[in-house]
Length: 82
Image 1: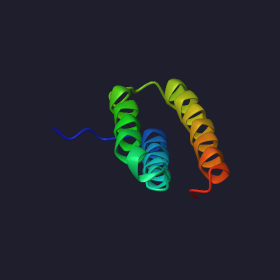
Image 2 (image 1 turned 90 degrees about the vertical axis):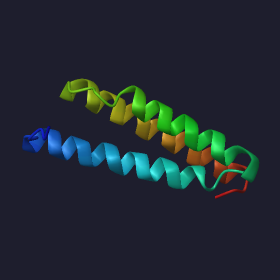
Image 3 (image 1 turned 90 degrees about the horizontal axis):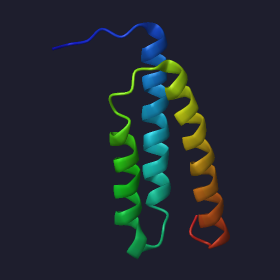
């Protein structure tokens, strides 16, 4: 079944996918022993909210995800992995 998205949902979906890709790229910068677990955690977080369709909640989670990703990148840089 194909579900047509309105423009607002389409743009939110694109932002979510962009965040997901950025998070997976950041996970590849982690120490080798932590990469798989970090990537798995990122995927679980995304899957947990996959069926969400409330634009306000999605925007909130996007904002939270960006902050968490920023913190992850900063931590990796401080440890010399980025």
